[in-house]
Length: 184
Image (cartoon, rainbow, N blue to C red; front, side, top):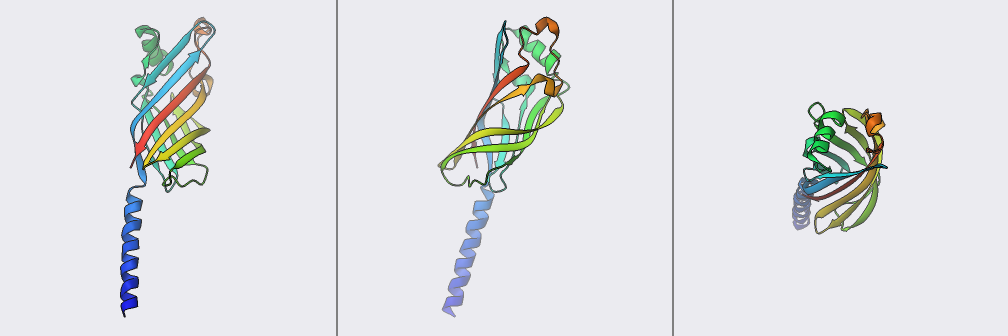
């Protein structure tokens, strides 16, 4: 009789621990940034935004991130920022860029460590969605995940036109850096 009661108590405790662990498996961005760099023959353009939003489900290894295109600051002049929003990314029509999908590798992000991973998902900019695989690094320490990723975006892949008149001032391939801190 005591053994059955002990088994029930152990089983109940295990259920409580499992359900508590399951609740804390969604990590959200507490601070994050996206920066980009256009390194053309006649001009270097850089801009960044600290308005990255997103979540990672560490059990399902799924994620979703987005950023408002008009939140990017920097550029070489206010007019350049205006052209970025109005003529290139058309942020009034296509306000967000996003990336959502799954972590390819079987990793346990509840355990501290550094994980070099690949993410596969739908990357959308300027209303055009491309399936992408993006390499990232996740550093897990004391219940916090730090994300670092660097990749390129080809403007032609997202129907972002580059007029010949600015061809020497705007690169056709944009370098993007992402950093984020995520907590349960």
